[in-house]
Structure formats: structure tokens, C-alpha cells
Length: 71
Image (cartoon, rainbow, N blue to C red; front, side):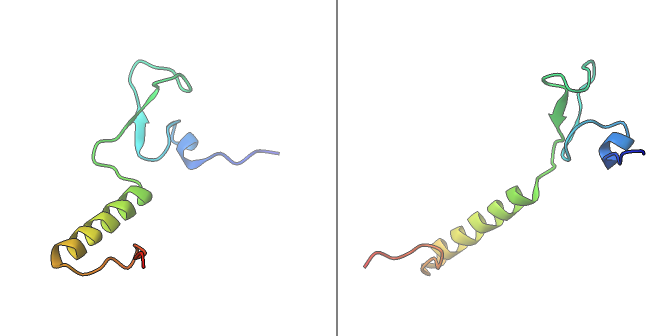
């Protein structure tokens, strides 16, 4: 029975999403993948959006609902 391969393995790409193979290295070696410039993960995008929203709230003087006020 054949085992299912990941899509990246089927293409010959051994790196995680957002990374590309480093020339001159073997698959699995340390440093064999490098980040793709300009690629951001969903978690990074969400964190950036939250930071931007908090900054906008701070500029307008409105309280941030994510922060608990100490009473």
C-alpha cells in the first residue's frame, strides 16, 4: 500500500510553508531552508493587526477592551 505524501514533498520542496530551499545544502540539514522574504504566517498577520488596532485606540484616547482595568 502506498503512503500519502505531503504536497511539499511531492513538488520536491522539503521546507515548511513560507520557506524555500537553500542552494548548496541537502534536505534535512541544518540551514537547508531559508525564509521567503515578504511571506508572513497567519499568526504574524493577526498579531500585526492587533497591534495596529491597539495603536489606533491609544491615539484616539479610547480604552483598550483587551486590557483589564485595575479598580
